[in-house]
Length: 252
Image (cartoon, rainbow, N blue to C red; front, top):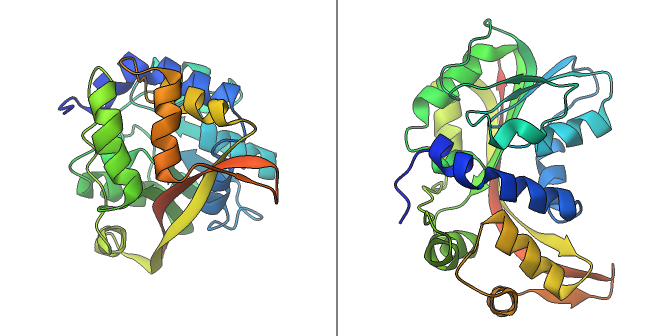
C-alpha cells in the first residue's frame, strides 16, 4: 500500500496520468461535466482548480466560460507541467496557498483529495480563498464503493507505489464545508461512465493513468470487464461504470 504523500505520488507518475487524459480526451468527460454542472459559472470572473494535476478541470471551465480568469494550484510541479500556459499556475500545498483572502468566485476539486489524509485544513484554506457568495464544488471516491475497491485493490497491486486512497464517507464533505461556514451544502453519490471508442482503449487508458506496470493490457481489460465495461449501442461507446461523491457549498 502506498504511504507517500500527494507530491511524491504525482512527481513519480503524474506524466503518465496526464498522457492518458491527453490521449483519451472523452474518457472522463462525464465525470468532469457532473462537477461543473454544480457551479453557476455564468457570472463568475475567477476560478480555482485545486489540486489541478495537468489542468483537466480547468480546461473544462475554459471551454464553458472563456472570459473567466483561471488559477491552478498543484503541489507537484512535474504533474503540473501540462497545465495550459494561459492559466495562472501556483505550485504549493493545497492547504497553504500564497494568495489573498477572497481571491475566487468559484473553486473546483476533482478526484484529488483522496490522496490527502487531513482534509480539514484544506477546506479551511479553500473557504478563505472564496469570495462572499462564492461556490465550492468537489468530487471524489466514495468509501465502500466498487470504484474505491478497484483503486485500493487491483490498482494498488499493479502500480509500483501502490494505491492507498483515503476515500470519503457519506456526509463527510457536507460536514467539512459546514465547519467552514459554507451554506446550502449538499452531496450525492453519482454513478456515471468513463467512455472509450474501443475496449482496448479503456485498458490502455487505465494502464497509463494509474501506471500499471506489472500487468498486460488484456489483463487490465479483463479486470475492467469485471467492473462492468460494456459497449453501449446508444452512443457507440465502450462504457466503464465509475462512482464518485459530488458535493457543493456556498460562502456567505
